[in-house]
Length: 202
Image 1 (cartoon, helix red, strand yellow):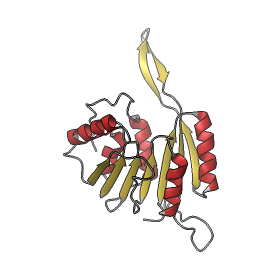
Image 2 (tube, one colour; image 1 turned 90 degrees about the vertical axis):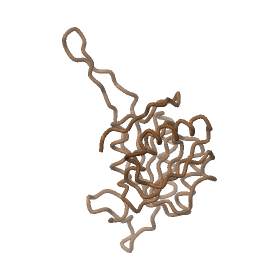
Image 3 (cartoon, rainbow, N blue to C red; image 1 turned 60 degrees about the horizontal axis):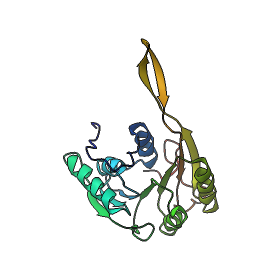
């Protein structure tokens, strides 16, 4: 798919394209999936999910940021295939009860969101964190709820010309927590996808 357009700024910056690529691979959205997002901001994750899933529910507690999500979504309407529901709401109260996959782009109320994921047995849960201390708390919260499948830490650097050669500027490290709230299978472990990743075989 071509890169998405984000002509409108939410004064918070979108999730970087390289990070979105990893998020997308972990969520593994399919055409019949209902995807839920907490903290849509610019709408970058919302839009890419709407190109793959059948339904998208995106929450954003700040009305001005939700307006930015809506404008950027409209700028990509030709590539959007999902039925998208944008909600000016807090999580977990505004979350649907039938989501197949969930992305948390921020740490506000994350423990309540994870409780909701467990209660509604969401199959794939991904959370991005940029602060080390929050990453530690989030990892423990995933473990306490038997959600955690893996923690990925990665950093992207972009090259620029310096004195006729190439140097690099590094983005902030990202800590990505990946898990599942689906019940254990009969063998006592989470179901594992055919590629070896967590989540049910699809």
